[in-house]
Length: 265
Image (cartoon, rainbow, N blue to C red; front, side):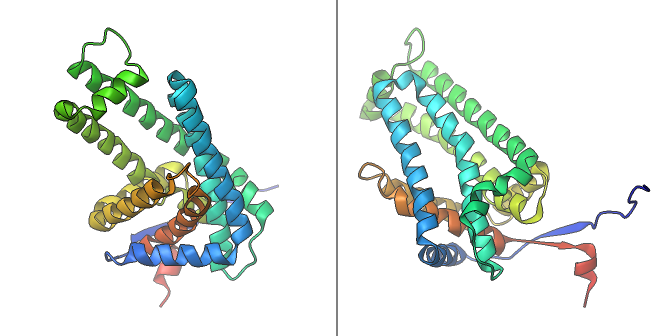
C-alpha cells in the first residue's frame, strides 16, 4: 500500500478585531446556550461545585494538602470545560448536542490536552513557589508558613507591603495562566491543533487585544467571586455559563482557515 503523500492543508490563523462590548456578547450567547441545554449544564455545574467544595474542605481540615487539591482541580477542570465547548460547538453548527459526546470529546485530543494541562500545572507550581519566596522575604517563620500564619499576615493591615507583593506575584501568574488558556482548549477541540500552536494563539489574542482580554478576565473573576458565596453554590450556574461563553470568546477572537479557503474569492 502506497503511503499518502498528499500534503496536509496549511492553516492561517487570524485574530479578529474585537471591542470592549464583545465580552458582554459572549456572556449573552453563553447564557442562551445554558438555557438551551439546562440539564447538560447542570451536570457540569455540579462537577464544578463539587470541586470547589472538595478544595474548601481540604483547606479547612488539612490545609497542608490544599495545593494538591488545587492541582487536582487544574487537571480535571480543562476536560470538563472541553465538554461544555463541545456542546456549544454542536449548537453553533446547527447540530444536536450529545451528552455522551461532551464527556468523551477529549479522547481524540488527549496528546494536546495533556501537554497543555502539564504547562498549567507547571505554572501553578511556580506560582506556589514564588508565593513562598515572597512570604519568606517578609517574615522569618523558620519553615513553611501554616494556614493560620498566612491568613494572619494577609489580613493584618500593617503588612500592606507584603500583601501588595503577594497580590502582584499572584496576579502575574494568574494572568499568565489565563492568557495561555483563554482560547487554547476550544481551538484544540475545533481544529485539532497541537498544544503549542493553541497556546501561542491564545497568547496572541491576549497581547493583541489586551484591553478586551483584561476586561474579559475581570468579568470572569467577578462572576466566579460572586458564585463562591454562599458555599460556592453559584457555580452550579456560573460554571457552565462561563464555559459556554468561553467557546464564543474563542469564536469571536480567532478565525482559522486553510490557505485554499483563504484564497477563495
